Each structure stands twice: as C-alpha cells, then as structure tokens.
Length: 496
Image 1 (cartoon, rainbow, N blue to C red):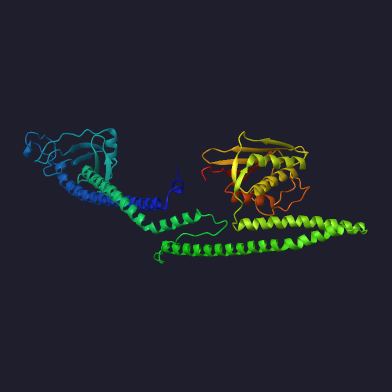
Image 2: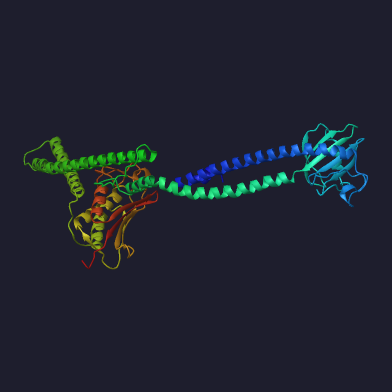
C-alpha cells in the first residue's frame, strides 16, 4: 500500500500526527547517523594516533627481540619482541624478503611477555603482504582475529613492520551510542505522538465546530418551505486559517439564509398570484361557456362555421375551466389549507373508480386485487377519488390498447401502520430521464408513451400533493416492462 493510499481514508488529525512523527523520525535518523559517523571518525583518528605511537615503539623490539626470558617471566620465549606497556590486542608483524617472519598479538600488559606466532590464513597473509609501507592507516579484517586498524612502515634494514590495533573498542562505543540514541529517539517519538495528538486535538477544535455546523445544514431539507438554519460557527481569530474558514462559512450561511427567505417570499407571492388568478378566471370562463351554449341553442339558423366555432369555444372553455380548477387546488394545497377529514373505505373507492375506468377504456384489461376486509383511512374522499382517477387515466391514455392494468390494495407491515394502493401496467414504461421530474408541474411523458390525448401535465402533481396532504407518499417504479405508481397512506387510528 502506498503512502497516498494509506492517507486517503485518514482524518486530518491522523495525517497531521503522522506527518509530525514521520518528520521527527527522519530527523532522529539523520541525527543518529550523523553522530555515529562523527563519533566513529573521531575514535578512528584517536586510534590512528595510538597506532603511530605503538608502531614507533615496536620497530626496535621487532628488530632486536629478547634472547632470554627477560623481565617477562617464564612465559617469555626467545625471538619474541619486547612489548611491555603495549595495548592489549596490539598486532606486530615483520615482513622480510617478501614473507611474514614474525606475527604476534599482545595478550597481557603486565610486563614483557612472549606470545608465539599468530595463525594467519592464506587470505590474511595476502592482505598483509600487499599493504603499502607508507605509514597510512587502513581497516582490515583478519580471519583468526577481529577487525583491525593497521599501518605499515619500512625499517632501516629494509624490512616492513606492520602494526595493528583492534577496532573492537571503537565499534562497541559506537554501538552503545546507537543503542542509547535508539532508546532516546523511541521515547521521544512516543512522547511527541501523545503530546502532538493532544495539541492537534485542541487546535482542530474550531474546525470540528465548523464540521458539526456543516453537518446540521446538510441534514436540512432546503428544497422547499421555510428553513431555519442553525447557529453560526463561533468566531475565532481571523488571522488563522480556521478563523478565516469559520468567517467564510458564516458568511455563506447568511447568504444561503437570505436566498432561502427570498425564494420563500417569491414562491408565496407566486402562489397568491396563481390562487387569485385562478379564482378570478373562473367567473369569465363560466360566462364564455354560458354564451357559447346559448349560441348553440338558438332557434335561428346558424351557419355551420359559426356553430363549429361556438362548439370549439365551449369545449376549450371547459378544458380551461378544468385547468383553472387544478391550479386553484394546487395553490390551496401549497398554502397548507387542510382537506376534509372523514372515514374513507378504500376498497369501495377502488371498485368505483376502476369501474369508471373500465367504461372509459374498454380496450384495456382491468384487474382488481383487494383484501377480504375493508381498509379505512382518514381523509378527503373526493380528493382521493381524484388521485386514483388521475392514475387510471394516465394508465389508459399513455399505454396502447390491450395493456393490462392492475389496481392492488394491501395492508402494509403492521409496524408502519399504512396501507398501500398501487396502479401497475405492463405498458412501455416511462423514460428514465423523465422519472426524476415526473411529479413536477407541467411535465408530460414523451413520445415513447402515447400522446393521442393531450393533458395539462398537472395530474401527477395534484396526485402527489393530495397524497402528501394526507400524510402519505406517492412513488414511481418504472422500466421498459411496465410502470407502477404506489400510494402509501396511514390507516385510521381507531383510538382517536
């Protein structure tokens, strides 16, 4: 998993803490590497100085080894160099005529001691014989010993003297420093993580208030009606990023609240205009229709053109009257005017409306699926009759002849305390691009459903508004195999 992928689902708090810890870990790593390299270099320089001093003391003893036990005691042997005062582990080698003549290691600093030859492998001899006698120090690893710092010098008689000091003390010191730094750095990371988490938590508290307010706003329904926005985000220092975000968010909430108020006021004015206009249009439309009927009933001979024109005036006046009634009903529903409240037997209502639809559409196949017991709801029977009639009319006019239409009434789950009334057909279905807006006003189906009979596009809007006024819901389920409108209404509460 990449770092970007790991951070993708993490909170800002986690990212900040992780970032601080990563930067601190990198800094600790850099400090540890730098101090280790610096200390090792310092110790190696000191070792080189000791190596030069030891080499000058061993030059004479390599050329003039003791011939008796000397002061070293019974352990001294003939031919061993005098090594009193040398550091334990000091390596002394003499190369004569291209081969190693002597190779000893100091084992004890208590006076002069005899050491015997050091066992060197072929690889060790090759490395030592190729060492340049220029007095420069280098690090090498001998198989029978440990890692050594060695240097070679040439004596007055032409022999090469090689002196070496062990690197063990240097490496152990560096390793102790690394172990100490590791413990200190791990403790520092833990303490920094805890302290950083608390600090980030405290620093992000204003941002959490912004997030909480934003969640409250996002949970509100801003589509319609008066909306009360929550309190503003508490103001913080505007010089900080969080303070600037809070100020901008408060300004945005103020602008949204103003826009919502203006929208609500505009919609209220529009509803009043539609209601007033619909109310005022009813009287002249009634007059137009009356005069058209009077002209058609005249006993005097009327030319066919005039009779046809009067018939068209009357039919259009009737159609416009229905449109005005629909607009007036929507305006009343928008204003929240309560509907009639009475017991409505949905079984009887479904039978009546479906019988009317069967007479109006004999070329369709009508079916009923009703429960054995009556289902009663509280509401306006006339308006519920209008809703079901609109749905059956749509099923009849927007589907071809021979389409099967099923009206089904069922009791929903007892926990929901609702009944479900559905109207389904096996027609061509409603296009997906229209389904999202099907309950909006003046929306009509396209050519995929028959438009032989025009409509105002208000039927489904009225049905949706009436169902909502009854505390229910109207939903649409449609695909190329058919369409179903489903009405859910609360059942009557017998205890009321």
